[in-house]
Length: 295
Image 1 (cartoon, rainbow, N blue to C red):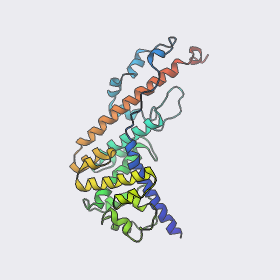
Image 2: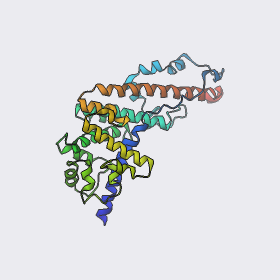
Image 3: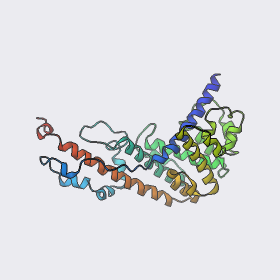
Image 4: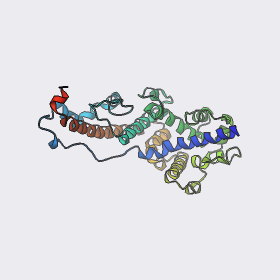
């Protein structure tokens, strides 16, 4: 019973893994309305400086490039330390930048065939850009392994040993032997067929997804099926929206599609940065001069 319980937990975590990369992926590019105060509402006692105006110019932000964005980790986005003088990105914007950063560097890493670029990303622990990047790096070769496009067993072992399923007592060999026969074969194996959520993570067809009641779980299943089908047909347009450029890069074996993610990352980051700066200036304008000076 203990082993069975652990086995079930393994597949529950597999479901979480797929949810993270498919369900969250579709939320990776939110475009919320620009918030913060209008410049005309700022206190005349605390006028906007030339430095402030620079911060409110998206063009100035874009000059920072990727290095500037990564340097801002821990200040405006990522694991931000409490600083009452700085208003960081919203939780939604923060999640979007983490996802886009991970997507871009995972895309480049998949072409390079190494996770070195993922490891160079800032942050530690679950949901950091580095962590998300390495897990995305494991995802695509595993799907290609299931499709028979990659034969090296390491592509399955990397997925099996990812942090989301590490610790399971089930045989890695048994899992990879089933995966080698295709995604549907995993849950058709008697050892796996009775496991809850198996078909959500590894659907046989759309009917498996339609049988799921929860809307997010259903979308997760559909996205997994779409990614599997699109990679099998070598058609990146059929991949889930968040994965389209990565699919293009993987299928063509070229970095060029990754640059579209980079452009989106810089553009969206700077929109969010300007929004945060407006909120910072607005908050500062409401603080009396005496209080600022500690008087």
